[in-house]
Image (cartoon, rainbow, N blue to C red; front, side, top):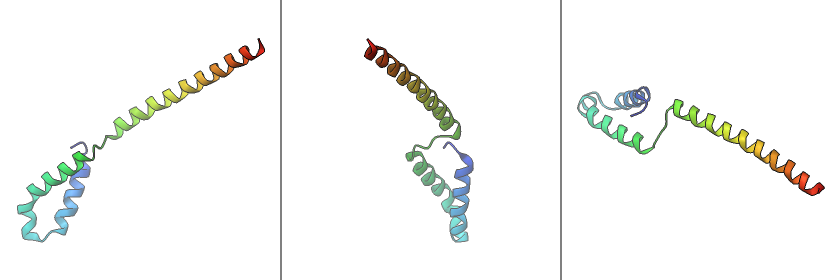
Length: 80
C-alpha cells in the first residue's frame, strides 16, 4: 500500500456503511480486499508523478532544441 491515508479513509467509509456487529469481524478481511484492489491499480505516489513530470519536461525541451537545430541545418543545406 503506497498511501495509508487513502486506505484509512476508504476503510473508514466502508466500516461506517456496515452494520455495527459486522464491522468488527469483517474489518480484517475488508482491509485485505481493499489493499489487494488498490495494488492492482498500480497507483504511483505524488512524488513519483512529479519526478516523471520533470523528466518529461526536460525531454520536451531537448526535443524542441533538436527540432530547431534540424530546421537550421535544413536551411543551410537548402542555401547551398
